[in-house]
Image (cartoon, rainbow, N blue to C red; front, side, top):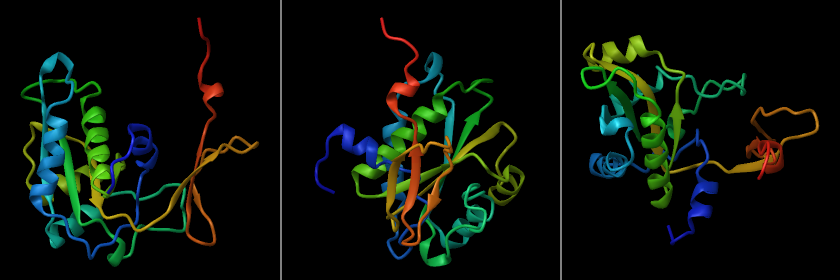
Length: 195
C-alpha cells in the first residue's frame, strides 16, 4: 500500500467481513501488528493483555464457528470459505495482572487494525463470541478472560461510509452490487457544545 495520511488510514479502516482467503498471513506478520499494540497506552501501565494467534486453517475454522458475523445482515451467516479471514487474534485480559482492563483492549485492537490497513490488509473486531467454545478449543486457562477476537486478511469487499438517513437508522447494509454501506452520524450531531 502506498503511503497514506493518517486521516485516510482511519477512514479506510472499516469492519471488513469478506476476505481473499487465498492470501495467507504468516504468524510473523500478525506478531508485528501485536508489537504495535504492545507499545500503546495501558491503564496504570499494567499491560495485562495477552494474545493467541492463529493462521492455521483448522484452528481458523474453530474461531470462525465461534463468532457472530453481522447482526444487521440477518440473511447472511458469514463469509463463504473462500472469503474467510486467513488469521485471527484472540485478545485476552490476564486477571492475575489486573481485574479491570479499562479501555486497553480497544486501544490495542484499533492499533492492530490501523497497522493492518497500513499494510493493505483489513480486519474486524468481534465482541459477539462464543467464549466457552473458544476456551475449550484453545485450552485457555481460567485467569485469561477473552475480551475480543480480531479477524485479519486481505480485503475482498468494498465498504462505503454514508450519512445516516432521515429515518435515523444506523444499520449497515449491502446493495445489489454487494457494496457494504455503513451509515455514520454527522459531526454536528455529535458535538454537544463548543466553548
